[in-house]
Image (tube, rainbow, N blue to C red):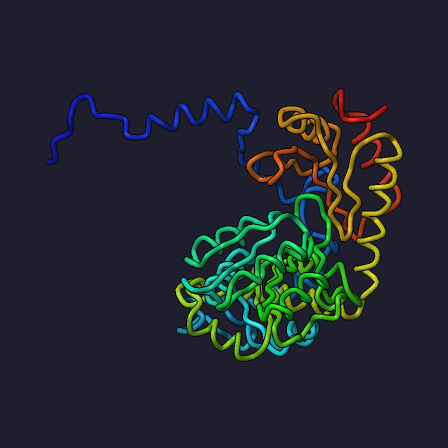
Length: 390
């Protein structure tokens, strides 16, 4: 039997100090399991089109699970690719206007795959300061030289690209998840064309909301299918499912299949998730008005909240960000909303790049006028001191 010291050293004692510091700063995060059926009005999830519980989305998941089983059974290169995965990739690429697509287990994995596989030690990666953590991590893992440029600043990006003579790519969100503002894609694309760089755009918050019938921000900007452009996206937001994808020229997708570690060494997306996403995609093609409705709801929330004195970022898609006086005030505000029957997101450092805490509201296409009234009333009634300018 192994012998243990009667007074072992607590090798994790440093965690106690870290926890205490988080508590004092109001930055403690906890898991809150939600019930299958909740009485709360949901303005916290990323279910922009209201498709997660749509009967067709659920049926797509059920039929896929019944036919293909509960899991993918292996990596995509071994046993994890089904005919359903290939079907989803074809239809997703065609809908968004790209030559080919590759489905991965998450949007996070898709960003890691695109950034790391399209760069190396000699590459310059130019990254917008407002980019999602998955892009930041992709830059770190790529081992490339990374230059972070000011948020939504094509001129800075162009000047930075001009300093490098080798391979280069510019990486940006299409819609930034914190404030819901859209990236200057036309300016970024022009900088890339002039400097011979590739453009990689995370369209997680654009798919289903922007572009004709929800085809995404790149489609709206006239960049879908351009030879130097790659898109990443997630199936967990507008598509009401789970998973991610990379879209671009066919040779880029072939390259990722052979080199992207988060594709090669990860188990494939579960068939049920692929089936749900495909069902949602087909539903959106039949009901393209859902995209415009999500933007309309976002505009209504912004206009009514700011008219009442709250400070919010003007939404370019379906995210409405409302500033709070502090991290602790944001946490209390979100808790008060929940107690009043409204679920809202709460963004605090380190999730926000500028250190400003916020309530993050999701404008869903299926929200009714009465629900919008209820949400606005609850947010205003629970607003902490210092949240309004009146």
